[in-house]
Image (cartoon, rainbow, N blue to C red):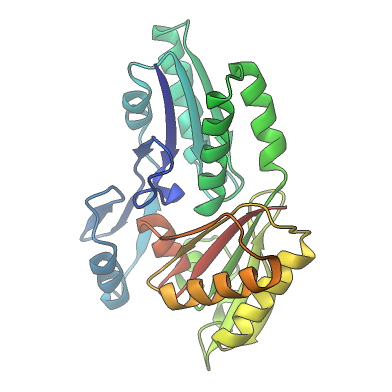
Length: 275
C-alpha cells in the first residue's frame, strides 16, 4: 500500500485532488485545546483566540500520530511544515525510524516543505503525479527535492501577533502591522523562515504588491495554490489579477485550516507557486 501524508498545516480538508492522510497539530491556551483535524470549526477557533488575552501556542503531532498514519503502508510519501518554524519534520523522522525498526522493508520519504499551506499542497500533488506516472521511490525522493526548491511562497497578512508571540517573527516587525490598515507582504526564505519584504496600506495595494512579487520571482504560468483565512474576497481579487496577466492558469483557492489560520490570522492569505 502507498500512502500520501501531510501534517495539518497542509490545508487539505477542502481539497479533493489528492488522496491523503492528515497528521494533526494542536493549538491551545491554558484553558482549551483545538485539534487541527477535519472536525475543527475554524471560525469558532478564531473567535476564541481573538477574545482570549492570555498565552497561546501550537504543538507538533506526536510520534505515535505519525506512526499511526504510516500503519499498513509499504511506501510512504509525507510532507511537513517548514523545519524553520516547527519541530514537526524532526518528529516525523523519529517516527520513521521507529516504524522502520518494526517494518524494515517499508520505504518512507519525508519532505521538509520549507513552507506551509499551499507549499505542502503543491508537493503532495507532485508526489502523487510522479507515482501515477510509474516513477520509482528513489526517483520520487530525489525529484521532489528539486521540485521543492523551484517553488515560492508568499504571504499577505494584516497581523503578526501570533507569529511574534510564538517567536516566529520579530516583535519589532510585528508592532508596526495591523495599525491604520497596514499590511505586510512576506515570503518564505530558502531556510524556510518568514522573511518580511514590504509593507503597504489597504488591500488594493496588498494585491498589487503580491502580484508584483510573484512576477519578480520568475513566475511564468505554473501551478498556483492559495489558502486564505476567511477572506475569499481577497483571494478572488488576487486570482483575477493573476489571470489578467497570465491567462487561464492551474489555480485553486482553499480556506485555511487551523494551524495556518492561527498564524496567518483573519484576513490573511498564503500563495504557493511554481516558478
